[in-house]
Image 1 (cartoon, rainbow, N blue to C red):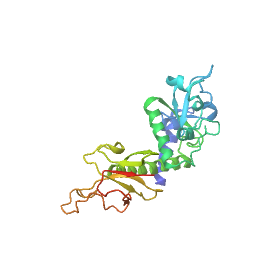
Image 2: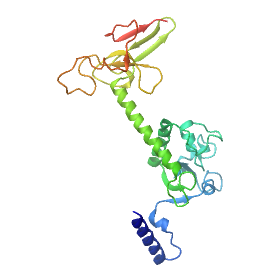
Image 3: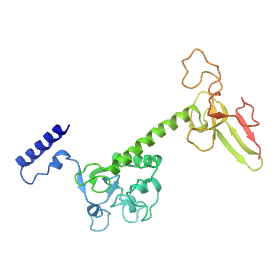
Image 4: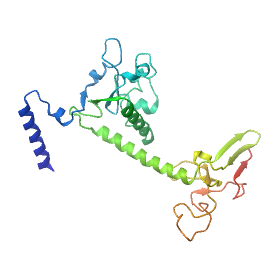
Length: 261
């Protein structure tokens, strides 16, 4: 690997020498990437006499001039202009202390929010280049901070996939509460926003790593989750899942539970 890296470096230097002293090998390797300093980015806030409006997120810079009414002076997101305020995309904190690029303390779920915004900008605004600083070095190479941010995003994606899987297996109940009647939990074929061909019965679900429980709807017949093709099963659906608990005072096969105060 080291010999290969040396060979590539020699080829780049040779090409630069042949193309003249004004040639920048970085522009040849990354023709689409423009490297901006924080000071240069700061000149793109949309103020009078400034060349435009740029926004940076995780060190990637976008031209948001078409959204001037949002990002220009007086706009709802004007605080994002001319800087990398990645943290604010997750927290919604648009105060000076919140408009920063330090995302090291954010949770994987919050990092997913930033990733979603990054995808939004990539799809809707022109990419300009990279901001030299926390996420990219002076050569445009990713820094350790960016690698840590990407690792947190990857962890968030895995957690979301697992949460989606749990929700499909155990859709949330419908619920309501009143001071007169107490709490009511019930299941339907659309409860929890999960359309399905079964109704289910209410149960408490205790997910590993989560605090407390929440009401879910559980299939009460057929094979358990993941064994749909099995010829031998108890015909109890997922009722025997060890993470479930019945509601006290509620019939085990009832589609609704009313818990008085």
